[in-house]
Image 1 (cartoon, helix red, strand yellow):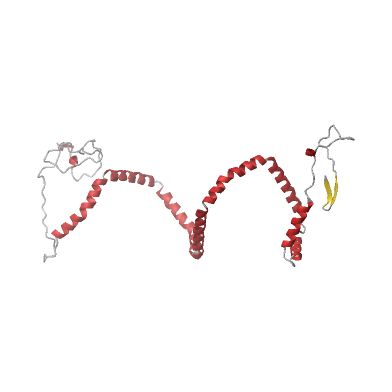
Image 2: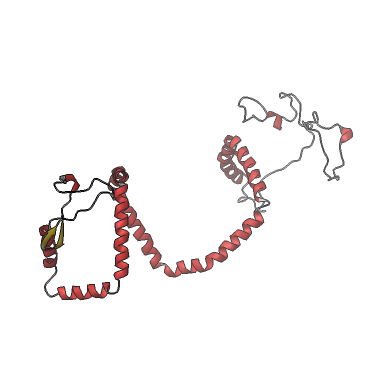
Length: 282
């Protein structure tokens, strides 16, 4: 059932479902599920009337003029828009199930957005503060943008110059860091005891009561008492002259091999505690 106009004048438009038989003849019955009727005109007119009444009096003419100016000459574009909308609606109808599934699956996401409303508002206020600060410092920001490229080029050139040696430096720093971690208790003890030791030394050797202005101290040099450790090192026949500063290869394992209870070199490295293995001497 179709209508010629909005005021009525309905007629029956028989549209075949296919080009093949059976065909309608006298006495044929068309079941209701194969028919369609137009939308009621009354509700549409009521909505149109409410829309017109919502426009303030005296402004309807202006609205029509503005609408004419906006839409005049856009017939082809509007037709393309309507055709595209029809295609979009048809595609949406074909994927209706997936569209409904998408809407259902989006509910947890939307619920999460509702739950984080306060956080979103806080973020927006913080962003507004940042943008306002940038607006206040517009001159400085422009200076940074103008000179930033030059600074970036200088930094790139510096990194290019450091590229050959930087990995070696970082590797060495890693070794130093590992030593610092191993000897952390000893370093901590040194930093604890060194300040009071220096303070005591300054108080003992103060020159306030010495008219010469020199510190009150006495130094003596003692050599070979007790003798230095020579066990575990190169024999005297392999010793070099002190003036020989050249580099030579030496065998491994050169260290003082005297017993730990020997009175010689009691403060040597052989009596240092091994921090890597507590309870063992170096």
